[in-house]
Length: 263
Image 1: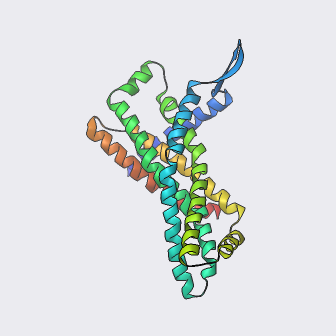
Image 2 (image 1 turned 60 degrees about the vertical axis):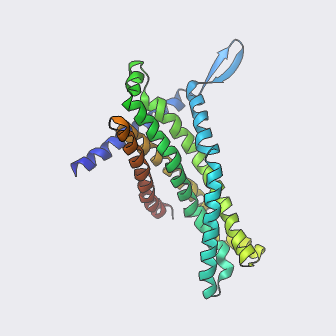
Image 3 (image 1 turned 180 degrees about the horizontal axis):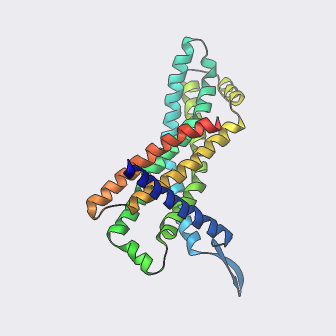
């Protein structure tokens, strides 16, 4: 039991360090630098690292995300229509598909995908650097490993998670529409109008808030497992595996509490 609380304490310390560095970067304007001759604004090394992570988290994730969310929407519409038809309520298929994707499935799909891709990559990078003593080298050069390795990934993930969630929501609804309209011959106007009637702006904002929190959890947990990796190739493998498992488990736990708070 004491080991569990020790782990929680270490995660809390790491989280506070990252948040403190983020606040310092914003207050001190560390994302851009200005040159006087000639007058121009240039990105800092931190900004360049953030841009690289934006591409990795966002652009490289979108193709697989579109496939996953599209088929999730199709499966959801197929099951929903079949159940609703028993009680002659198939007209509300669009309502359930839209509400489920926006409030729950969209953020969860994105979180699982990001945990699998970015979480594992983060844990692998940090754990490899630790086992090869590159982390110690950064400290020797007076470079903060948390600021250098975690902060760019956290900022990029926080920026991209809501955008990816919107993509997942839209494609999931379209996938559901393909099944409801194309397979079950439900009226397209009925599918869309019923969905619009039931969806509220607060549903969308709640889903986006969830995605933000999920992104923070994934990066913190993956980074923590990377820094705690044991020596050798086996230690790196265990760090990556535990990072993905812990990230997804933490996301699901957080999802419950966020649902209670937001809805």
